[in-house]
Image (cartoon, rainbow, N blue to C red; front, top):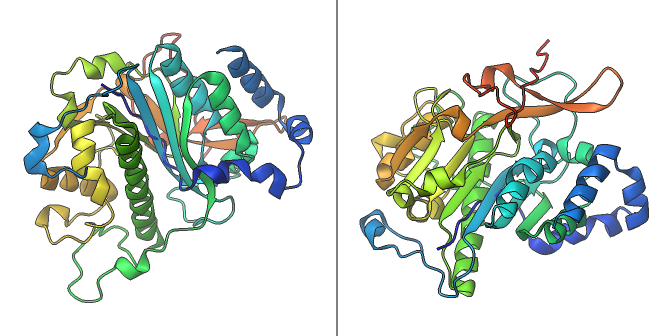
Length: 359
């Protein structure tokens, strides 16, 4: 059986290898321009080495005919300017690979400076995440993957914004996201764009499974700006006898629905929900007449007959975070206070949150 964690951020694999030439930088120059903490991270990693309907849910067989290690896929969809990637590699991907899982990363992100600048409760003086990490030269991501013994399955960190306006019904438009309805509100349009990116990445997942004749066991959908404050204990989810048909989320800040910052899908659940996440956005169903994204996700799971399972914050320890300049000018990550769940353990395995100054 395979274990899949997907990091969505929009794009094509070959696009991961054009940035250094496009910017006119040699590998030597690129390395010289890295902050020391990024170089340290790279050196550390260098050293260490289909579409299924709800009625068919129980018929899914997720076995890898070739055998091998359990496979994890990480999906990220969002904006390059918000893409906190180096810490995800350090705290999520690297430990899973070291634990014996076959980890695969799928990223699709709108290029730096190209995405919508509308931010809910923005943090002053926010820095571009991918620019701060100097991973906009995406060949470096592939190098980290090769040296860290995980796979960069799909990557485009320089795509343009997804076209979504043509999908919006002109007449009899269903009520969606009443707090920020598309197309009137840019935040609602951003939800549509992200759903389209996720749906496209799920197609990449299905293509990989067909070509490789395997099925992932789990898919982890984690947001671009979600920072992992602690470890992910995958075994605790796999020990749930019904994990294949469930979606796990943090049991906090649900705003009337489910916290969608990081979602862990069993493979059956992913097959039912993600392939038409964008295509069925305007489906005429009362469960989808919602006020916000959290309620919308809950409605989608109900329509698809998938069980939602909220879990303690410690089991999915992520928080919305941004890079800001420190007093000495060096960038650091801080967590948005209004998006930080309570109850994070204080053991050495977890970071102590650094709250952003919202003034």
